[in-house]
Image (cartoon, rainbow, N blue to C red; front, side, top):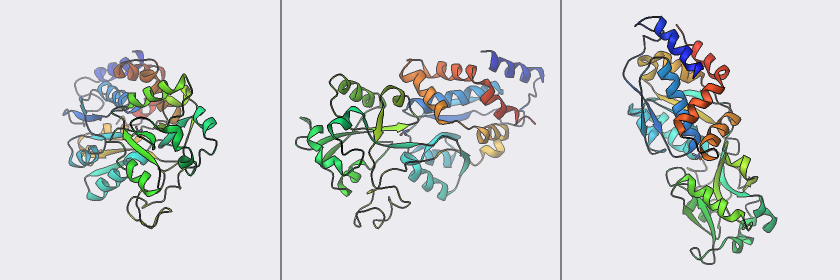
Length: 316
Ligand code: TMO
C-alpha cells in the first residue's frame, strides 16, 4: 500500500527516534466489537498507528462493558460510541472518571426498530409506532404465537427492547439476535416473498444501499427517558421513547493516553468519519465479503487525502 509505505519510510528516515518518539512503545489496545464498521475502523486506525511506528494490540470485548475498560485503562480507546446503544454506558463511565471524550465524528447516527419498504405496503400506518399493534398479526410466527416478532440486536448493544415493548403496550415478543449476521439473514429470508419483517438496524450501515427501508417513529427520545419515568408518554415506565433520531458518534480514550501516547491521542482527536465513509467500511465486509484487515487497508489506500492530514497535523 503506497500511502502507508510513505509514512513508514518517513519515520525510518528520521532514524531510531522517529517522528513520534515521545509516544510509549507499549501497545495501544484497541477493542473490537461485533458489527462491521467498528471492526474495519478499528483496524484502519490501528494500521495508521502502526505506520507511525507505534505498537497496537486488538482485543475482542463486550460493547457495553468496554466503557468501564476504557475508564480503567484495560483498553486505550473506543472509536464508535453510538448514542442510541451506548449513550448510557458512556455517560456513566464519563461521570465516574478516567475516560476522556476525544470528540465527535461528523457522522449522524440512528439505531432502532426498522423494516424494509415492502413491510409498509402490508402495514400502511407505518412508520408511526402506533400502527404496530394493528399490524401485529403480520409479524406473528410459531415462536411468538399471537404476538408479533421483533428481532432486536445482540444483547450487548441494546438492553431495553423488551422494556420498550412493555412500556408502550406493544403486542410483540422481542427476541435478541445472536449476531449482526442473523439480522441480515432475517431480512434476506423475507425478501423473496416480501414477507413483513421488523428488525433492529442502524445508519450508517451497508444495509441502506441493499434494502431501502425506514425506522419506526417511536415517541421522540428525551434526555432522561432511561432514568425518569416522567419522560416519554407512559408516566410509569422507563424506555418509552425511541432512540435519538439524530444521534452522535464519538470517540473516547483512557485519560492517560493523552500523556502516554500524545501523538496517537492527537491523531485520535483529529479522526473524523462521515456517514458515507462508515457505510463504505461496512460494505467492504458485509457486501463484498472482505476480511476486516484487508477492508481497512483498502479504505486507507483509497482515502489517503482524508486521513493523512489527521496524522501530519500531529507531527511535532
Ligand atoms: C451498535 N450498533 C451500531 C450496531 O447499533
